[in-house]
Length: 387
Ligand SMILES: *Cc1c(COP(=O)(O)O)cnc(C)c1O
Image (cartoon, rainbow, N blue to C red):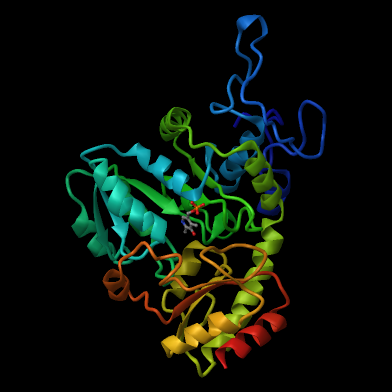
């Protein structure tokens, strides 16, 4: 922590950390918001570098969100990047050519593309397994396995992975574990406490919360990994801009209110949709019938605000997308507004059709990131679309 707020004797609770973060006022002026420090470089008095020297290496606006994510996840230092994918790529820079990685079958489309296309070009071999099956994980381990990449709940099918179980397997063999914690946020799931080495976020989603920025965050509790992540961030330069840092810090302040409101709405919609005649199945950890419910709630404190719905017919998806008025129809999630995604053609477009079918991501599946609107308006709008 580079904070100069001093050591706190009693740890603050998450809602307080969200609002005050590591620094809650500008040290230079006392201003109630850390300004957007647009400067690219800093005066070296008498030729000597001060705390800041060049904005790629460090910037007070970015420091605010880097401290915030470390405090929220229980890391020793955080890193902010220009997008969630830049965060994932930068975290995976902890691996090198010749290493082998184990990854889940179903995961965010961009991560799937990175692990299928970019990682192999860098000489990193990837095996995709049913990561919810700990035996399958053990069996996939090779002498050169150095990383396990995780996402739980998985996107968009909400498969639940036993984080403590995977971390236990990996620790024994000095394999690094990476978790994309975007769906849960540190408010609902704290992977570092469960033994995961590196927590990753797309700040574009719930942390930013208003669908108006792109950002990525990484944190870890291991000082050795911190040094390497810091070096790569400075060397590669995919840093979060001062303006987006400001927006992200501002969004993080209201995360608890937004996420709890969205989560409450999501449960109402999930329960009602499960009973709807157009619906085959709803995937949502908050449902009493959800298969991974016990495991999910053994490692997370909430179900989140995203669910997915399998409809009976392809035509019903078309009608829904044509009819709904409130949700923005788009490949994203985590905004104050409800976002409806046709995973097949949007968020998971990067995955070839036959592969999607094999994974169970069908053309009849839609994902709903439930916003903070009045749930009755959302229900009226959705049921009009479902006919
Ligand atoms: C959106 C998303 C990403 C990628 O984040 P960007 O900010 O769009 O680069 C990664 N993982 C998950 C789970 C996401 O939802």
